[in-house]
Length: 494
Image (cartoon, rainbow, N blue to C red; front, top):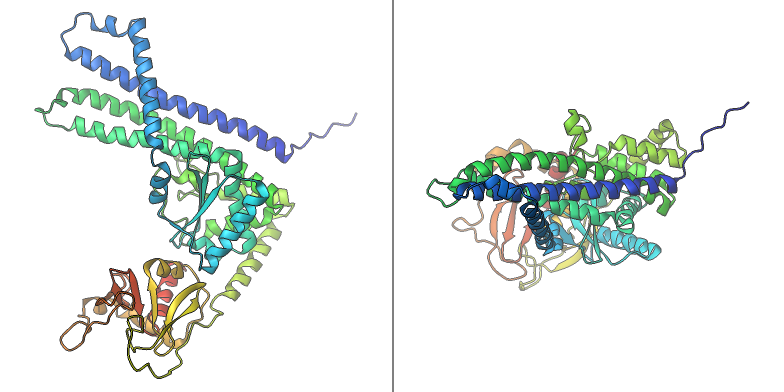
């Protein structure tokens, strides 16, 4: 009698099972938060009644009526906290993640906007806003505004290094959170974690307060509550991390189904995991919103239980199984994809100076160096204002951060030598006095507002001399200075 081969579960069945686990874990997380609030209310009530000269305090506190009153108080406190945490949630999350709106004139941003809009129309998703984060790291995230809309964000590092199919797979992963509704659970989970940090700060202040303070008598109570909240915080973190891991696996499967291209998402995850700059800055408690976290895959059992994401190797394996691609073939395809990407790097010549004589009279929007006219020119997908006479560039702080993540322009030998000189003599350059601004060397004027620009180094780490207008937040780079700074940025992530 032939043995029956076990039926392999379909993608939809696997997703259905994961959805049940997600909502079950979310319910457990809410229960833990309520338990923390209830015990806190109970301990505070006991402390107050112990301090007051009331006979038979424990029998009074622990009877059915007062126990029910404390439960009701805890429920009321939980509801009030929840509504308070919702106030300005979108703005607080955008600020914490250091998000910036898309630049409609940026070629990379326009590509992302097109992908997001295509995905929104094809999926029928609600209103989704798209933002970026100016960091060299590779990451993406999604969260709910708790009003029916959502936000999808991608870092500049990911925009610069992912191909369009790979970026589409990443965006589809984030849209999977939106369409399934799990981005709401993730947002709520991150907001609920705020209760622990806020309460711990207040309890630390009470526990270390002065004896003359009206709260000094509650110092022991604060220590007890601090210990209890520490236990519940660990339990909640383990539960929230398990919830986040299930969400990520579910979103990977859904993204593969939406794009019908699991291989591109697998390639994106592998590149994100191996990127030297990592996932960029992620505020504490907000890692569940991102496609990858910053923690290592190894560690002690408790650390592993608190990982917010499954190992990237496991996620790639599951996607390869959907694509019916062997790991060896995938590695060869990855090597070929990296080789193609490297071949596209530094293949575009930057805007060059022409040496045309300067204009007769300098205008407020003329080149601050030679008086020539400033004209927009494409530099790494950004329309910088460039002087074709002397080769200077005018860029905002945000534009410089975007340029730092991109690798389109080709560098000349002179620019590379300048970068090497800045590295070799960096300490001496930082200690030396800047000539401009000294006697007989006037400061240049901002092309936008006409105010004198400050002569300074771009940063303590990068000793590139630049002129900066704090009023307009603009940098003026003389010939080869921007390219040299970009070379120094690249050295940080290779």
